[in-house]
Length: 87
Image (cartoon, rainbow, N blue to C red; front, side, top):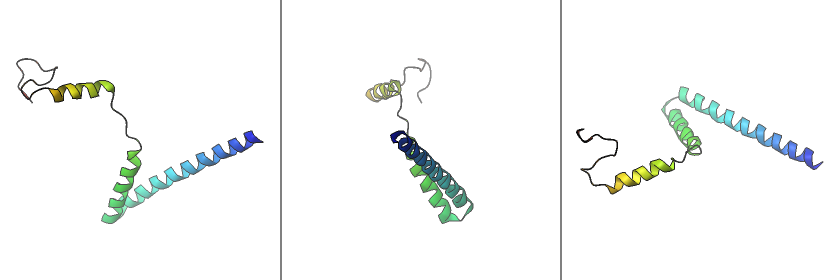
C-alpha cells in the first residue's frame, strides 16, 4: 500500500504542475491578444515565471569580472591587442 500511495501522490503532483503550466501559458497568450492592461499582466506573469529559471554564471566569468573591476580604466581587457582602440 505505501508504494501505491507514493505513485498516486507523484501522479497527482505531475498532473497539477502540468495544469498550472498550461494555464499560465494560455493566460499569457490570451493577455497578449488583449488590450494594454492585459499585455501588462502578461509581461508581469512572464517575469514572475522567468525568475525561477535564473541560471548562475560560471565561476570563470565571475573571476574575469573581478579582475576587470580591479583594473584601472586605461588597461582594458586581456583579449585586446596592444594596438586596438579602447572600447
